[in-house]
Image 1 (cartoon, one colour):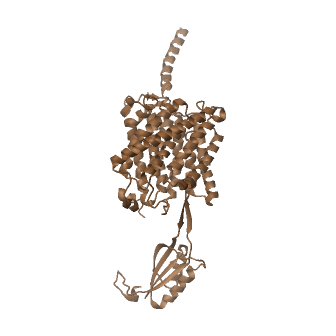
Image 2 (image 1 turned 90 degrees about the vertical axis):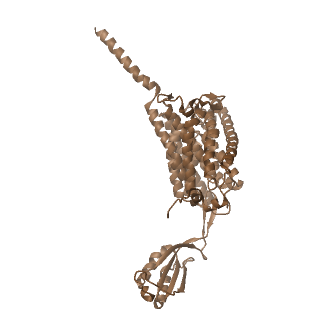
Image 3 (image 1 turned 60 degrees about the vertical axis):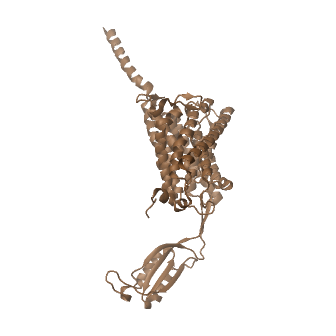
Length: 112
Length: 430
């Protein structure tokens, strides 16, 4: 089992969600985050006080997938989230030790 | 017989009409109704207008503290006023400096007392709202770092020792009014006074931790813009109400107030657009307030063209003082009580000396209408206000420091945020 963490631009959330649903991934968790990589921030001025805002709002999406559809999921995210501009985001893949469904106690891939 | 009946009837009519005239000769119900409404409008300016205006510019962690200080300022102003403030400001004149304590706790004033054409209670309450908002303006300089207990003590002393005498000088029969200084609704009494006091208090308190280095974002420009709109609305009571009558001069004051506010907003906005390349909502809101501040001393004296100029200059001047001058001089007048109220109030007081038109109000003739002396009188009143406000505020600060065991919160409290540290509350549950 793999955990796929994707940092994407907020306005791409619906597209990525739809793309994942289309390949059979029905659940996910998202967090509103801030961050930066190569994308530059912006300047804000309040009555002459200038501030550089380096952190840019992004969405972090987390999904747990079975090993065999991990690549499909990654491709779905990449295609949906890509805008060909700096700041499109990154995808991280991590191994998952165990998954348990709270209601039934099911474990492993059945619980995904 | 017919003649006797005619005589009787005219006699009866005379008696009846003299009853009616007796009421009209004292209280005018139109004036009274308007000033009651104006009082309510100005009241709203403090806990609603100013609280939102200042609160939105405070950092989120201190938003409620700003509200708290503003709210209690009005309450303290209200209570001090009816205990001794009214008498100090409007009691029988003592040496041109202060009012006698004849009316302590509103002693001697009854439901039948009349001031001009309105009940004295109404006059006193109208003036009270001015005291409340003036002290509230001062806190704009010192948000984010003052002990709440110290603010309460400061406010009580400041209204008593600083506000009331200056109000007496301008409006209560004191030396400034006697000299012929023109201050229709409080350029000296309210804005220059509060601006100077705020600057001085901010110097005693010192700069905020991280000032100039750390980003200090306003919690909500939305709240500030809303506050500015409420202030504008209430300012109609502030300026047009200062005529103390529902008449043509009040209407004229209403007209120039709105015009100056609009010009101030557009002028600040355009200046900012040129200098910073983007017009901000904060700038538009601030410009409107700058325009309102500067028209305050002039409202019942100047005509429409003058108000276009007064507002336009206020917008540019306000922007300069806040965006450039403050950063050059390095003081932390956090929400620009001095930059907007002090400096634009100063412009307004001078402009009154230039533009006061006897065709609008026979009580005031300015430079443009041949009275060179008026400008000099205005300057003297401005200097007098600045000096007294400065020195007396220092005295109040020193007493407050003693009574409150210091003015400033601890470093930990300041970093944590005053809403949590002083009030145990959060502004928003998001």
